Length: 117
Image 1 (cartoon, rainbow, N blue to C red):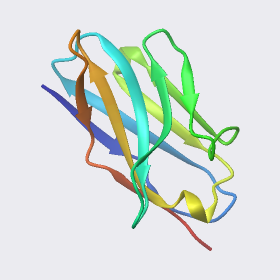
Image 2 (image 1 turned 45 degrees about the vertical axis):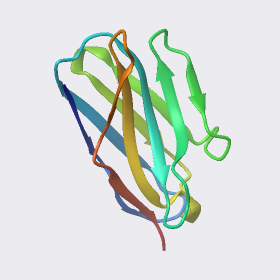
Image 3 (image 1 turned 180 degrees about the vertical axis):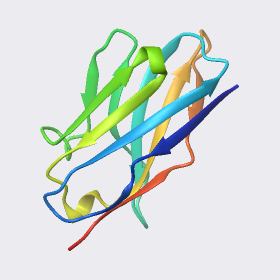
């Protein structure tokens, strides 16, 4: 079993920056993919960014050039650096990991990001 805990959310003005963290604990073996998703009120959950075992990254079109996903394998942590934030980035952000040979999927509890003046 893997537990994921996000942190770093909060209120920020448009144009500002935030850095989200997602730390894992538990039985961690073979991390295949780490990702960040977000869900705004009344909208479907969408992929923000992901990084796979080999290091290749993928970003949602709306965040390309502004957000950066990175990882610290030794600390079992994935980060999301968010720059040039816009009000439309307001959402609950969730981390998502695929672990093990069966690609068991785990979600964090979510952290609120609010971009507002």
